Image (cartoon, rainbow, N blue to C red; front, side, top):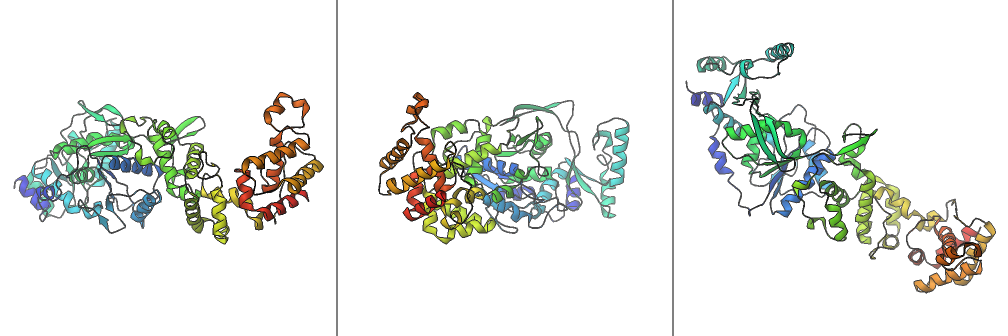
Length: 550
């Protein structure tokens, strides 16, 4: 028996690797086009770090006219959860991340380089494992788990590096006759890669994000095909990225230590490896120290958190781009209304240490993003969110859609639009006071700020309502009338007048307008009062002012 016969004995009905190389040819894309993939395992909820990776992959694929794939790495089927693939697809949809190729649900996909589910690519991996066996670069290993455990114990006792390598690789040098006999006897086996690495030598590599890095070569004879015929992650990754013609592997830097193995496997297959870009994890500050954002400890690590909170996908993606490239913030200042599609992400400008997750920053960005929406878009997105998460808000919005649109249109479309809405879960608190059936029936806690004499408050409100309220006034006339009320009650018409001679006045026009604002809304901070009054209408205004007087 020779090695070709051994390969045929192990994989008797498997096509030659060259068949798949022809089936999946080089892609006909323009120079510089990046082919990237998000390759999660369907083993639980999607971490925001996975979305971070997907945002980056989607961005670089779009800006280079490349390809963004979704590949499901499900070779560890013991850990797979029910509907795990659909969970991943739904998570991408929630962030408006559309793939060009890959899985579209549990069993269907799009694209010419599939299957995009590793469990459906078994024969492809076996074809390349067969090639390695033929070339004496891989071999069957019959070691049982007890033998491996015993070997590890001995290594630990002797304070040696654990693993299957060198003299510890018991099946590495078995004769072909013995291998044949044991296979034909029905002994269970796996396929191991026969490493030619030497840990005394260094592998030098340029990572697109990390820069130049060095590792000891891998000398472990790693498993490439398990006893069930499926590949390990390491082998599947290499075969898939080769045949799918991936140009850049963008992944978390927890995989950095696997790089020597992956590069070694590419070399063994005699194909050029893709470029690697290892992303630092999103961090969280706790007790003055940094740690990785944790699925177990941090609600914001789960994709579902953003859905429940009602943070728009645009805002979350903008935040992730903000922590991906330090120059994004400056770009946004210079391009206030531009789509994030116009921003050019640069992998070599990503942080090598990992950005801190900042909820305040995320909500600030979300306020800015929502401020650029039309009132119709705010209504539609908030209503869709409310249908799933807040029935009370849904009822509020749908009761009188035209009125709700007017409410949401206050200070929208201006050069400096309102920025008081950061997420849909806070929208009801921000607009509820605009609805008479709620405002007029509730007990309002009027806190009038600087002016606190009840009689004077009552007189200011009454005077404004009796003598100054006219919704046909333009904005300047409207405000001049509030100044008239201020002057009548001993307050400066202008803030600067008051600041120049504070002893001459009780306060200034701002204090008086605050009384009217609070009487109308119950709040000291609201969007533009002139616009609020025009949405409320005269009848509602009078009811509200009378309620405040009482």
